[in-house]
Length: 112
Length: 118
Image (cartoon, rainbow over all chains, first blue to last red; front, side, top):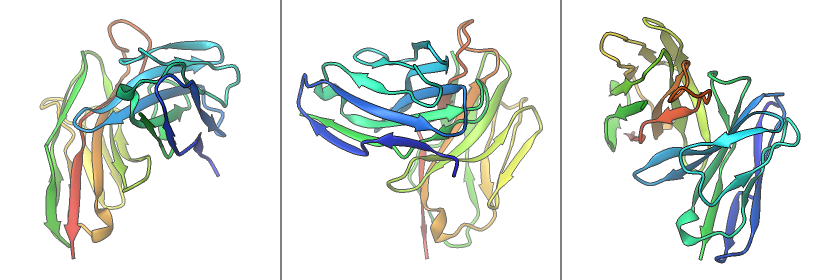
C-alpha cells in the first residue's frame, strides 16, 4: 500500500531534550516536506527536500533540522525543543514539486 | 506572496443539504489548486484538484471549478452525508515557485470545519 508513515504518533517530552520524528514514504517520491498545524494558523511549512541531500527552509524553520540521506526517509529533528513547538506535525511527499502531496497521519508533540 | 482565503467555520448542515465552501486565492504564477479533507484524528487526504483555468475537479460527489477570472475554487456537494463531517482545506501550489525560488510548497487556507447532522 502506498503510504507516508510517521513515528511516533504521539510524544510528550520536556524542554531541551533532543528528539527525532521519522517520516518514510514507499512511493519513490522525490519531493518531501514537513508542516506544522496550529489552531487558527492552519498548516505552515517547516522544511522541504527536492531530492536526496537537497533540503531547504520553509516558512517556519527556526528550531528544526532535517536531513535527506535516502530518498524514502526525511526525519525532523528538534535539537532543543521548547514549549512553542507543541504542535501537530505532518510529513508529506509528492512525485515531484508542484504535484499533489500525500500526507502522513501526523505526530502530536507536546513539550512541557 | 501566495495566499488562500476560505470561509470561516464552523459550518453545520443537515444530511442531504447542499454544501458550498468558498475559497479564493492570490498567486503570482500559475497555481494548481487543491481541496484536502482531514477526518478526526487523521492526516490530510487529497479530495480533488485542478491544474489549470476552467478545470473541474471532482471526487466522492464533491466538485470545484478553477475560476481564474474570480481567483476562486469553491467546493460544492449536492447532498452531504454524516460521513462528510471533517475539516476541509483549500490549498494552492504555485508552478512558478515562490519569491523566485523553486519551492512548490502548498499554501493552505485555515480550514473549514463541517458538521453534518442526521
